[in-house]
Amino acid sequence: MREVQFREALREAMTEEMRRDERVFLMGEEVAQYNGAYKVSQGMLDEFGPKRIIDTPIAELGFAGIGVGAAMNGLRPIIEFMTFNFSLVAIDQVINSAAKMMSMSGGQYTVPIVFRGPTASAGMLSSQHSQAFENWYANCPGLKVLVPSNPADAKGLLKSAIRDNDPCIFMESEQMYGDKGMIPDGEYLIPIGVADVKRAGTDVTIVSFGKMMKIALKAAEELAKDSINAEVIDLRSVRPIDYKTVIESVKKTNRLVIVEESWPLASIASEIAFMVQKKAFDYLDAPVVRIMGGDVPLPYAPTLIEAYLPNPERVIKAVKEVMYLV
Image (cartoon, rainbow, N blue to C red; front, side, top):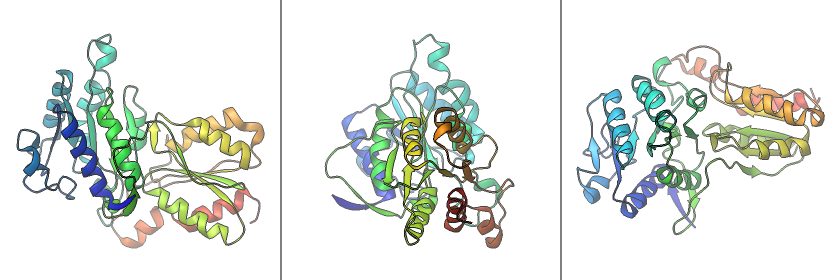
């Protein structure tokens, strides 16, 4: 095991897969000469050259479309969006081309492409640069949507995504690129669609993914001081979702709190809550509670950002509510 930054784990995944398969290439804004907007691709231009590490204009629709066409013709592109807020410019190519092509062609074409980049809030970036789109893309058949929460998962999941024959949305966080964590030595892959129990427990199940896992785990640590033993599940993948792991946990703990940054309506949390009440209704001792971002465009002011985002205190309060301790 060795310690690396989140950005280094992503770089290792891409570099290893590019060494392994000459069809893999990286394309996006500032990925080459500038070494990536967040230095994820640092040094990759020097190793692989400008034909495989490709700088683009500020034209997401254009280079996303080039990536889809390249994937249909046998290559395996990694398309980096500087932020998934900018992917809205390219969403026609992602949703109407990449996601649907295998179905529309009767299986004659696959689109082995990865769209990756940061998602959700990252400080004082205001409404147009702080949106969490995981549930948007997870709503689309034909896509796989991955949201890692730590360097080890990021590397293993990205390698799996690059090798997958379906289009994958790989969503990171600007605020996590500098996070450090232990990763295994040697090559490893993490299967898509398998959740991970980050902390075993018996009293309540807390489900989250991505950056919000920090909130969930911090809340679990604080709850332990009050002798409340929370089981914390990291979905890692929000399409497909590992319902079985969540449902089996709820059958054990009888209570569920879900933590997600996105807006409340039609969220991943809504889907999890529906499936739990469908598959484990008789095991629930309290209503499912969601801790979500605010149902407003994210403001700029730090005080309003703090009020908007989930935090450990809100999670702790929700846990105590479902345990009827408040």
